[in-house]
Image 1 (spheres, helix red, strand yellow):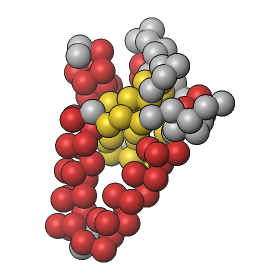
Image 2 (cartoon, rainbow, N blue to C red; image 1 turned 90 degrees about the vertical axis):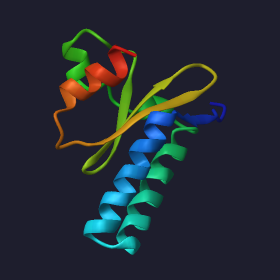
Image 3 (spheres, rainbow, N blue to C red; image 1 turned 120 degrees about the horizontal axis):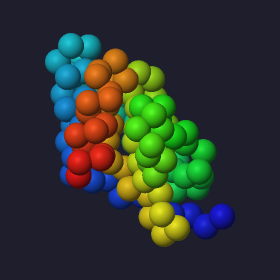
Length: 109
């Protein structure tokens, strides 16, 4: 399979920045940098195998199968893969109210 470009939407980029800032404030800048790097590595890895993600249960229950997710626990990385690109749409702490967040960010967009 060919390598696909991975594009991070503005919203997902802001999600990553917010996660970094929160961790830096509560656990320190070293931990924040580590988590940021690990999430970024997970995102980049999708260029080689975007099909490996799973369809989020919350979205499947709503009848939507066009999005997938991978994990860097507790963070969930939601994306949409086409034949030519992978779009990172949302990066969120999985302990949040995901159903509402997914509905607002992915389905109503």
